[in-house]
Amino acid sequence: MLVSGALSLTPSAAYAFQGSNYGFTSGGTDSPERTDTIDRFAFVSNTTATDWGNLTTTFAALSGQSSTTDGFTAGAYTDSAQNVVNKFSFTSSSGASDHGDLTVSRGWLTGHGEPETYGYASGGQNGSGTRYDTIDKFAYASNVTASDHGDLSVSKDKPIGQSSSDSGFSSGGHTGSYISSIDKFAFSSNTTATSHGDLNLAKRFAAGQSSSTHGFTSGGRTSSSVNINDIDKFAFSSNTTASDHGDLSVARNGGAGQSSTDYGFTSGGNGGYTIDRFAYVSNTTATDWGDLSLFRGQTSGQQY
Image 1 (spheres, one colour):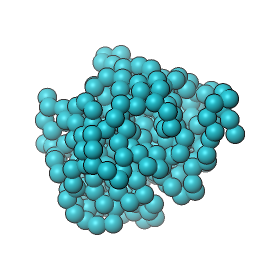
Image 2 (cartoon, helix red, strand yellow):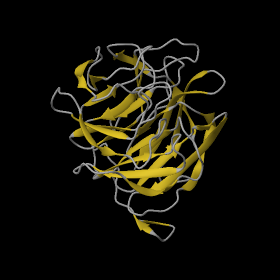
Image 3 (spheres, one colour):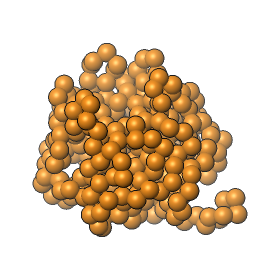
Image 4 (spheres, helix red, strand yellow):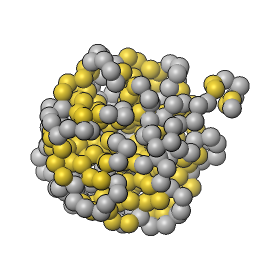
């Protein structure tokens, strides 16, 4: 199958979190202006992203999820906390549609997913200082209100999300102070998350990426005013402290994370338009991989 006579698309492997073709960056803010833009960029070529339609309204501080055919955003902050779930097609730039609601209205949350069946959203804050430990679960196939899927070990905002084949991970975040702990919860059971080690730095507002074996956090903040370029790596299979995995090309917070089969991508954030790419297998500085069409942070990422 060809799109615009250019790139040959390879369907994402069943039950694999990673995409093979494109990354998407949806919503966000160039403070104080929010955007509804969905950007698409190719995993195989270093070029400026193109507009891929719009969300149902302008959203910031939203989470991102990916099925094998569609991208989702869940929760957000506009002038108040939102519970809306949006859905958009990976193969048609016709824009997003409403796809139900979360159980709790909140922004500054993070996303996880099983590509075949369900998306998850964890943590968050209502804009008035109330933080949540809620893990929501919603079906990709049906437009219904999400169900409660247990709780994180602590209420926190701005956590960083990763996904293995059977579990979601919510790493770092902010409880009133910056934290380094990594929470792990099973996709198959509605229970409270358990501890899965720590990041090597206490941070929030980083982007999250997932290989088939490891979770990554890139960028973020370690205090209210200090942005970092660090990339952390932790194993899905073992409860240990994360290790350093190189650096982004620029320090930033509020970027979106995308995951291909071999590389992690970090797009946008307060570092600007830049899309960075780093290899899962080597600890080196990320390379510039083109630009978004808009300068924005507090955005969400998806992959196909």
